[in-house]
Length: 72
Image (cartoon, rainbow, N blue to C red; front, side):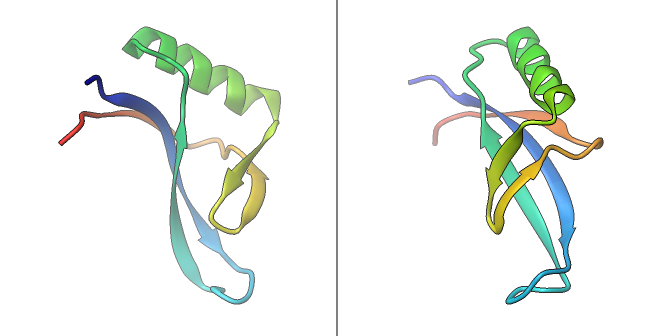
């Protein structure tokens, strides 16, 4: 079984009910290689398209990372 690529970012939640917390988001990518993951994440971030987060939907912030998670 293969691992998966994610676009990740952290943002400060100023909204209720979890106002004042720092949220960590992981957005699953379709990519199967590191190069594809970087390209996909960059395209998503530059598009301004909203992604589903723990508190609704928002655009990808300027500072994000691409990570790989192997199955346990």
